[in-house]
Image 1: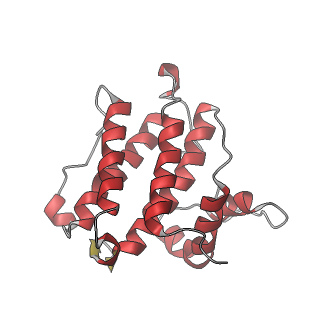
Image 2: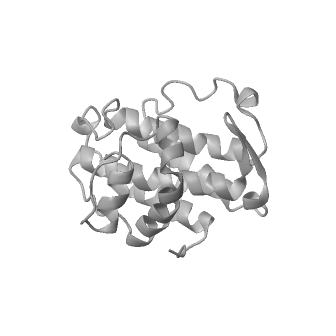
Image 3: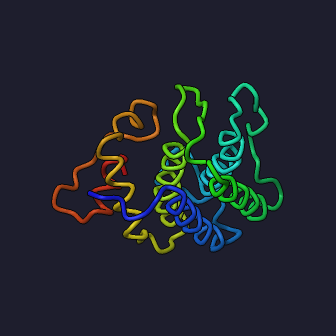
Length: 188
């Protein structure tokens, strides 16, 4: 399957999809459960905000040791949507900088290209958009192009994600559409 879009565009669209759902969170939904059994809506949103905060740091060539514990704990504070919006804005901006895709990113499990890192962040936002939609009872239909993009990559890399603890056991979705297959691949 050929990717329908580049990694930077995919991250923009995927993070916009997460933001669109986050804007619909009602005050009484922050403690609602999500398909990520260890996270309620707030914890899931915090996780994504933390991921977004890491993007500029990683694309700037910093190491995990350089950043330290700066993003540990609750980064959402008293104004969670404002904090998430600012983190997403900075992440998108960092991915759009000239040369971002060709930089080396230093992760805990080794180095990778900026393009691969941005791709991982796009896939993470795509999947967590579905998780958030489910948690708030929103529209869980994902952008079909992002689904194809994520599924094409995860067919090759899902076991790596699974062995790192990011995905649960693969579910059966043999006769389902691509979105259902993508979600099944991620253990949802």
